[in-house]
Length: 83
Image (cartoon, rainbow, N blue to C red; front, side, top):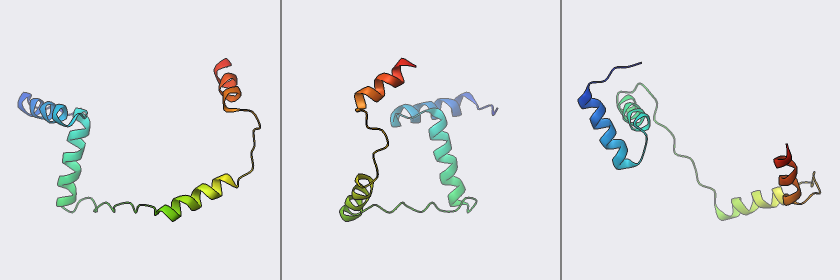
């Protein structure tokens, strides 16, 4: 466990409240940014967004998959909730 001064903890709490995040999350983000700037952690590669055509292709692949459970979603949920 790391002991922080009251001033540091208060600053982290104010930032967390302003960003609507947990104190742990804002501290982690700050540390990751400093680590990237220092070259300790490699730069994260932004994820590529799918095009509309790619999303439709994924949907088509999923729709073509065999139906493994012929029950309705309600019947499946009722069975799960009965456990």
